[in-house]
Length: 205
Image 1 (cartoon, rainbow, N blue to C red):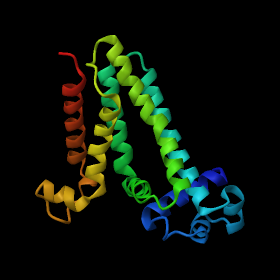
Image 2 (cartoon, rainbow, N blue to C red):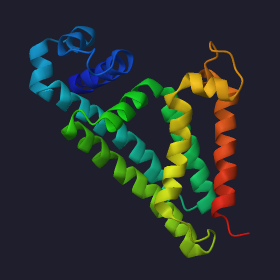
Image 3 (cartoon, rainbow, N blue to C red):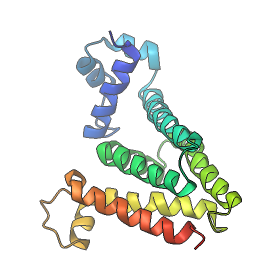
Image 4 (cartoon, rainbow, N blue to C red):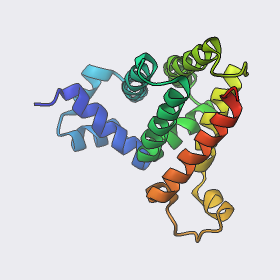
C-alpha cells in the first residue's frame, strides 16, 4: 500500500498543476486523496508547507537522476550534458503545468518562504550540472565557459518554450490549437537544438 504522505503529495501535485495554488484547497486535496482534512494537516500543517514538500519531493527525484548521470564514468562529459538535457525535457514537458506554477511563484514572489524553498531545492540540482561542466573543463574536453550562465541558457530555453504555448505556436507558425508539448517531434527538436548549442558552446574542437 502506498504511503499516505506520498499519496497526498501526488494528489496535491495534480491539483496544484490543474487549478493553481490559490484555486486548490486542503479540502480538495483531502477529498481527492481519499483522506480526511485532519490527516493532511497532521502531515503537512498548511497548504504552503504541503507545496514545499512537493517541491522537495520533485527536486529529490530529479537530483537522483542527475547524480546518476554525474557518477556514470562510462560516458564522456558531453554525453552527460546530453543526458541532462533529455532528462530535463522529459520531466518538464511531462509536468509542464506544475512547472509553470513553480515559475509563477518565483516571478511573483507573493510567498517569500515558498520562493526560498523552491530556490533552495533547485540550487543543488543546478550545482550537479555545474560540477559536470567543471569536470569537463578540467579534463580538457570543454572550453572555459561561464558556468552559471551556461546553466541559465539551458533552463531558459526550455522555460521560454514551456511558459507560453501561444508564443511558442506563433514563433513556429503553428495554429493556436497545436499542443507542442504533446508532439514527440517537437520534443526531439528541442533536444537536438539544445545539444547542438551545448556542443558548440562547450566542446574544445
